[in-house]
Image (cartoon, rainbow, N blue to C red; front, side, top):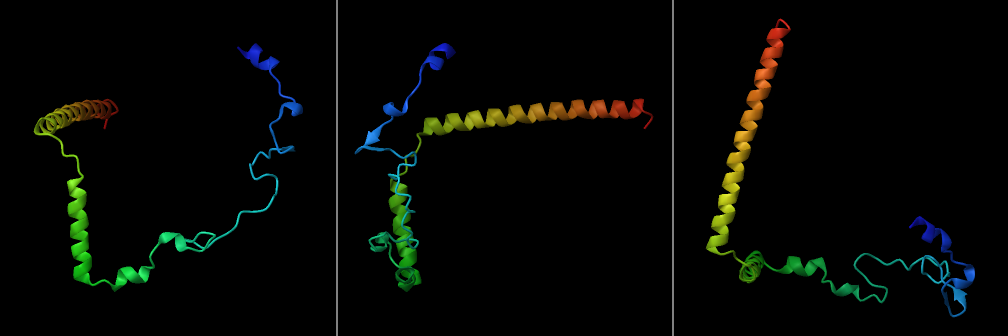
Amino acid sequence: MAKKFEKISVSEEDAIESDGEPVDELGDGGSGAPPVKTAAGTRPSGDGGGRRPKKAAQEAGLFTRIAQFLRDTRAEMRRVSWPTLLVVRNTTLITLVAVVFFAIYLFAVDRVWTFLIDNLRTALGG
């Protein structure tokens, strides 16, 4: 396989060209000009990116914001895909079995280490 790759070579004549000029590796057309800097949240055209000013959100009263939050929460809860009773039952059973298994495993490991450390302490005269 490596022999095949050694035979392959690309010459400068085979390089991809666009409008008679070689394509720059960075893809900026070789102009070298840095990108236009803009303020955060704005586009070069100055339309503000469609964002509302923070001031508009603060003008609404406390109860208006709470009511909007509750409406949004209700709409979001309607989109939730709720699992069936069978799926909930199965995943709960799997979770309980895993918890019991790991509890027994960690208890056994703890007992083995306790036994080994106690015997090592006794053997060393502690």
